Every structure is written in structure tokens, then in C-alpha cells.
Length: 318
Image (cartoon, rainbow, N blue to C red; front, side, top):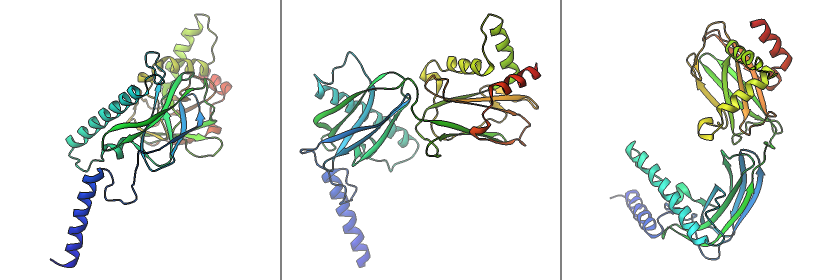
């Protein structure tokens, strides 16, 4: 055996022994951890309608769990912190096992251990997304012993109430190219794509939309087409499990079919994109004519359809 093979053999042996000793170091001498006298700092960075951004850090190198859940009157994490932490850790481990099983069935055998997959290490800036507006949530963290798989030390918990409307100024850019459409949520301040702002979107045939609007107006409601479209969308998004909020850039291959509607040559369509906060403030509306796979249109926030233009276009299509 040559010297290189000996070094590799020794290295593998050391790696195995290290893994057996601490389970989670993966032969990385930098990945040290402790559970003694560890404190966790939690600093809320942004509290919006659909998400809460929080910064977590520890005074020592440690593994810890972070989570967010809606306030439950039945539970009392202050009076029963140990039970609360145990339940949270059990839930996280159950999710890990389900994730691991899916990967194993898919033929993936290089699977991260529980700590690497579900626990935090070092300073973390995390966005909890998909949250309801004007709702109280518990944001919490606690240290975890990755060997004993048990919570250690106190529970760090804050109660945070989300806003009614998003406090993040945002706009949406939109592109239709061939059989694909793309949505870009753009932060108005930084001019960058926002990856944690939740939004919902839909596309409607203008002719069908106007028929519904006319039927609504006949009952006495005087809505603009844009207001009607927004209310229609919010009605479809009455429940989070039905709304399917999106994050970051959304790319969709429609093959001429979108939201269950088959595109027809020469028809005009409206695409509505709105922040998932049930607000009429952050929304964007674009229109385009479907001309098959030759369509290549890019809309920026400056192209957002003005209300009067929408009404004129709608009247001309009757």
C-alpha cells in the first residue's frame, strides 16, 4: 500500500470515529458544538402581512431549533416549556423522517443527518412565510443536544402579530414568451427580486371577465373591472391551502392552458398579480393578446394597466 493509500485509510478511519463520537461533525473540526451555558438572541427584522423575518444567533457554537406557529390557546409554552419544546422537537424529527424516507425511495443515499437538515447552527436570518395577516404567532428557539436528541436550556419565545397589509413596497414584472410566463416580484426600494413576499396570481379571458362584471353590475354593485377582478381573486384565495401563495420568481409552462382556461388565438387576457395580504394596495394588472408561441412580451411595473384604459378596452370588446 503506498503512502497516499495509507493517508486515505487513516483519514477514513478518523472520519468514522469522529462521526461515531459526535454524529454530526462530518469530519469537520470547525463544526464544534456545546449545550452548556448557551444563550440565543432573537431579533425581529421585518413583521409584515405574509411573513416575519427574524435574526437568530448564539453566544456559543450550538445546534438549535427555530420555529413559528400560530398562537394556540390550548397550549401554554410559558407554564410548560419542557413539554412544549419536546413536542416541537418531535414534530421536527417526524418531518425529517418523512423527508428521509422520500429520498431513500428515490434512490438517494447521501442524506443529511437530522441536525444538518432541521437544526440551525451559527447566526441565521430566517423568513417565516405563508402567514395570515393580522394574526398572532409564536416565534421561538431552543438549544438541542444532537446526540441525545433532546431540548436543552430555556425556551426563547416572542409573540408577534402580523400586519394587516404588507409593509414592503413591491411591484411585479411579468413576461409572456412562447408557452411560458414569468412573474418577478421586485422590491421597490432595492430593485431586486424579493424571494419571501407571498403573492397570488391568475389569468382571465377579458370577454368572460366582462360578462361576469356586467352580471354583477346588474345586481346593483358598481365596481370597476380592476376592483371586480381583485375581489374575484381574493374570493378564490379564501383559504391558504387553496390560494397556493408563490414566492420569488414563478415560471409556468402553460402550453396554451392556464388556470384551467385554454388560450385562444387572438383573445385578450388579463393577468392579475397581488400580494397575499388581501389588500387592494399591492397589486398589478397586465393584459396581452395570445398569438400562440410567437408571443414575446415583457411588462414592467410601469406597464401596469391604468383603470381608465382597462375600462375603455373592456367597452370596445363587448
